[in-house]
Length: 47
Image (cartoon, rainbow, N blue to C red; front, top):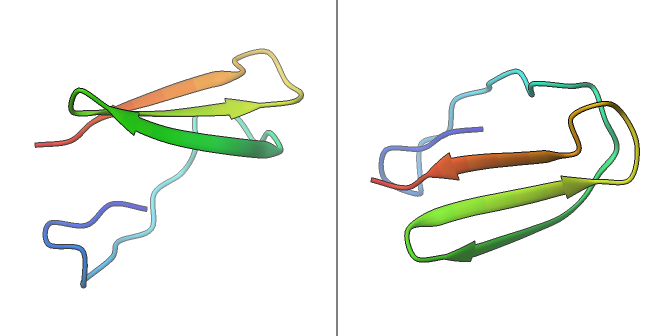
């Protein structure tokens, strides 16, 4: 999901249909990790 303001959200497709287990935020980047699949890490720059 993406949001321009933290209130309104838009659905987005994940790069992989994995089981996403954890997400963290630091230095302007969100990082999500998965326990399965080929691509097990997704990042999203917060602007």
